[in-house]
Length: 117
Image (cartoon, rainbow, N blue to C red):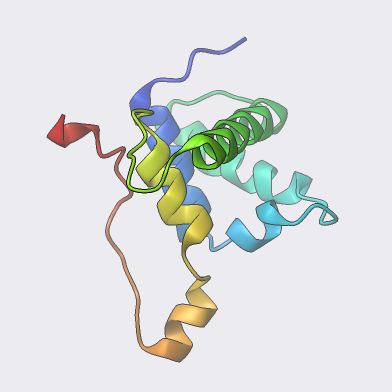
């Protein structure tokens, strides 16, 4: 089982955002092997040698933890999980196509939000 550093996790989350594939990965019926193979190909030259299956498993774990955190938060309460804000930015934001239609767009990197802690 690979150890995922904060840097590597945030790199994966940024790639998911930059490739505009959140809608594919949120779908329960969509096959997403090709998406994770693309992420694997982009991570490899950066020194991250995980298989697409490992990346997929990591994404599923992050998404599951996010959903559990979100479900258990009381109104006005903030999550202490370091990836909550990054996952929330991905899973609650409209797709890039929707952003274009509304005139919004964001090229900044996703961060864990832990820098302020």
